[in-house]
Length: 248
Ligand code: F6R
Image (cartoon, rainbow, N blue to C red; front, side):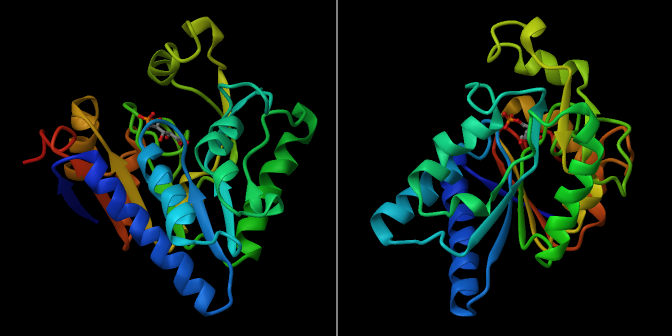
């Protein structure tokens, strides 16, 4: 792994969007689909903003793009403004020419009975397309990537998970109180993420400084699932000054 530290998240996000756009165009020239793993939350918002700008002003097409989102709360309706389904449409999909059938987001409405098979199918679909070309990540204060909370296995696949208390505390303002934050989610696994050919993790602000120190400089441990990325051969941590402030 290596780290790149920028003065601002704005500047950094533009560089990351340029890498993604470059990959999309490279795949276009080869006439092959570009398989992107995408994240929600505050961290990737400016990356999506820049991709939308490139679509509108520079004609960047998403016609060959197939996306797989990392996670979704469970249970969660698609039209709920807290859903990751809603988030992705609001920030990216509604503003670009991606084909609706090429959008994959774990379903927050799948029944309990169907959940297990649904997760296996999500995993199989990624593999059948040749795997993720690029995975965009944020990081939670628990060290989660996707919603792989402490205790997650190195080889875990897409599955349902119980959210850590700290994760629910962090989500509470958006849900107007912790009691409204779902207790569960569906998430791609650590193994799913690690299988990506390229991983970029975004970290902004002082609130992420401590977990990023553990992630980048600490021992690999299931207590901080993001430390598993230390063993991935093509991962970059893109940080701003605040997020990098505890690195030695
Ligand atoms: C979101 C996701 C999470 C977030 C993390 C950081 O799809 O998988 O791991 O990336 O919780 O969230 P923000 O960016 O809001 O600080």
